[in-house]
Structure formats: structure tokens, C-alpha cells
Amino acid sequence: MKETNEKKSAGYSSPYEFKGRIPLSQAIPLGLQHVMAMFIGNLTPLIIVMGVCGLTADAGFSELRTALLQNAMIIAGIVTLVQMFSIGPVGGKVPIVMGTSSGFLGVLNNTVTACGGGIIAYGAIMGACLIGGIFEGILGAFLKPLRKFFPPIVTGSVVIAIGLSLLGVGINYFCGGSGKVDYGSLPNLFLGFVVLIVIVLLKHFAPQNSIFSSSAILFGILAGYIVAVIMTFVLPNTGVDADGAKYTYSWVVNFSQVKDAAWIAIPSFMGFGTLSDVKMSFQASAIIPIGIMFIVTAIETVGDISACIEGGMDREATDTELSGGVICDGLGSAFAAFFGVLPNTSFSQNVGLVSMTKVVNRFAISMGAIFLILCGFCPKIGAIMSIMPQSVLGGAAVMMFASILISGIQLITKEPIGSREITIISVAIGLGYGLGATTGATAHLPYYIQLIFGGSGIVPCSLAAIILNILLPKESKSVRKMWDIDEED
Image (cartoon, rainbow, N blue to C red; front, side, top):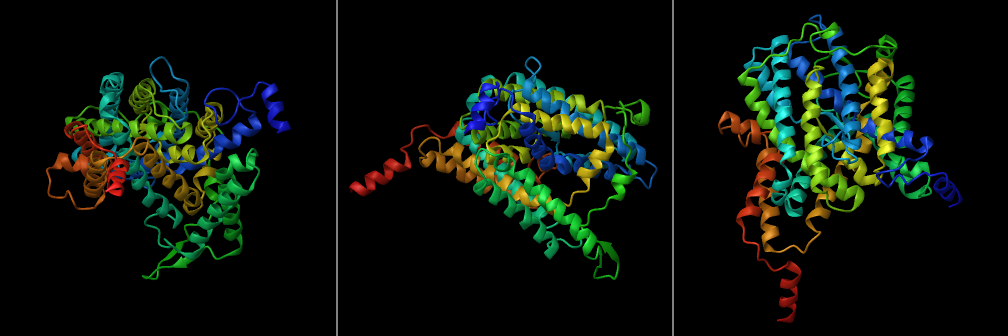
């Protein structure tokens, strides 16, 4: 209590308040939590798309790959700062962390094929992202009159869909990473549980006002990272698969990447320096599907901001916050395209972190954004983050992602739930999310419909909730009143 009063007298605010400054000793670890939660997810989409385009190290593109990954960290940090502090109408002044979106992967994979692959296809993707980002920015400017289509019952359903879509991602991390030979192995699960147990213990048994409680995610991940390093030195690092091929366990910490990384590197602009071979182009086969995805992204961003404000501040997002957030989402993606980086959108992983910790102070989160920028200029720092085993991140992810689901439930239960609301939620989640999230369910639909609905249940869930909210009559007795009537009878 004495320490809290001293901080107040020094002009410091609370980490649970959006505005105001908190001590650096508190802000830095709180900011690092956000970086660790999104670091791998921020780079993975770029690595996947570069691989699909054929821009691999074996093909002679190692310098280009390094430069693009470097830019991805810098852009994520810059756009996050704009989202929190805003530049005019750009930015919702919300505690949202921005990063490279994985939601575009399905569309981008098809786009690469349509554009013939190679560095030309990558340039066409950047051109489409530029146009699509500007389009989303314009859509965000007109979001206020559209707000009536996003009441809590709709945004809550979308947030629930976002949470559901991330649960599998969290478990994949927990088990060592999707596609790994030792997926679900005992060492991977052990690391995940170490992180999870440390977080729970610190969150609920450490003093509530201490840095150990508010930064439980950070200390949990650090504990898991240290255990992984110890395991790397004391346990065998390789195994043999069913075909007799030797492989390295996914939990092994490989320091060679840190050793090979440079201390300082200057980012490159598309068409110049290391990125001189990447030329932005504009092809309809890329612009149309990617443009459609930017509309979808706007809906997801509305859901992310709604979940973040509800989960972190216990209130609904305002028109200005939603509009500014979507504008930043779009124009931030357009800005990223000039540096060869994929669309930068709100990161649901970090929304879960905010919902779980209630830490919404933008000064603290900005420390994480600045750290991301430093990682871009100092590849060695980025390398230390990138070699962290996925099972370590998974121990925190399973809790963070589930908390998004809880935020959605809080949104839809703000008002009494009647038969109308039950219908909207049931159809949106049951049919909408179920169809979109089930592999092959939309395989026989037209191509562009598959692009919108296939692979993610968020989009069909959103559309179902919006349409039903418009069509169904507003008069509906609350369930609570119906039960009361039955009891009286």
C-alpha cells in the first residue's frame, strides 16, 4: 500500500488505466509480455508466404527473407503505436497490439498460384495489399453509421468465434507446433505445463499489486524458456522418425541462429537496397480476393476491439474507437505493403492477454512496441525471441485464447437473453462457425465463396449474426421472465 501511494504521489497511474504513465520497472516487463505473446505469430505468416512464392534460402533469397522479417517487426511496432496514440482519425486509442495477419494465408496461397509464383507474385500481393488496405481505411471512416449493425449480441458472437478459432492454435503451440514430428511429445507437454502452472501460481498466490502478479505471463514464459535451455543441455536433442530419418526435437533451443544474426541492420524499402528485386504490381487476380479479405478483416477487427474493451475495461467500445481502429488496420496494412510486409491487423492473441490480465496501460504496451522496433534494427534480439520453443508459448496461449471466448460471453450476456438472442447465437456459432471451421464443408461452393467462408468460421459467423439481427423481430421476452412465468404456473 505504501509503495502504491508513493507511485501516485510521483504522478504515476495504474497499469489498469489506459492513459497515464507507470514506472519503467513495471512498464517494460508488462510490454514484453505482449511481444512474447505475438512474436512467433507475427513472423510465421510471412515465412509461409515467402515459402509458397519460392523465396527460400536455398533459392538464393536468404538476404531478402531476413530483410522482410526485419521489416515485419518494425512495422508491427510502428502500427501498434499509431493504434494506441492515434494520428488524427487513424488509430482507435485502444490497447490493441498490431501484427502480421495469418487470416490472409488461405487467400494468399491461391493468389500465388494465380499469379505464377516467384518474386512477381509477391509483388502482386503487395500491390493488392496496398489497394485493399486503403479500401479498409475508407470503410473504417464510414463505420459510425454502420454501428447499429454491431450490437453486443453480434459483436459478442464474433468474439466467441474468434476465441473458438484460436483454441486449436493454442493447443498446437502447447504440443510443440503443428506439423512437428514430436508433436504432443512428453517434453513438449511438460514445457507447456511448466509455463501454465507458473502463470496460475503467480497470478493467484503472488501479492496482487506486485510485478509478479501483473506480469505473470512474462515470468511464466521466461521460466519455460529457462527450463527448455536446461533440457537442451542435459537431454538428447535428436530422435529418429518412423522412416528412420534423424530429426531435431521441436523443444530444443538452437543458439546458432543468434550467433549468425547481425547486431545492427538498417531496414529496406521496396524497390531499394535488399528489397530492390521486389517490385509492386497490380493484378486483378490478386486484388479481388485480397480486397474481399480486407472486408472480412474489418469485421474481425471490430470483434477484437470489442473483446479488448469489454475484457480489459469492462465496457463497450465507442464509435470513435471502432472507427479509428479499423482505419488504422487498413492504412497500417497499406503502409506495411511499401516495406514488403503482409497486412498488419489487430492481434487476437494479445486481446486475450489484455482480457486475462486487465492491463490496458498504453505506456506499458508501447514498451512492447518499441522493443519490437528494436528487434527489427538489432536482428540478434529478434533471433533470441524467434528460437523460443512453441510449447513454451503454448503454455500461456491456452489461457489467453480461452479468455477471448469469455469476453464474448460477457458481451452477449450484458442484456437479458431471450428467444431472439438465442436464435442469433445458435445459428451464428452452430451453423456459421461450424461450416467455416470444418475442413471441406465448403469445398463444392464457387471459388470466391470458398475464399470468404472456407478455413475460418469467423466470417460466416459474423454474417449470420448481422443478417439475423436485422431480420428477426426485436420484441422478445427475456428467458429469465419466461422462466418466472413457468414457475408461477
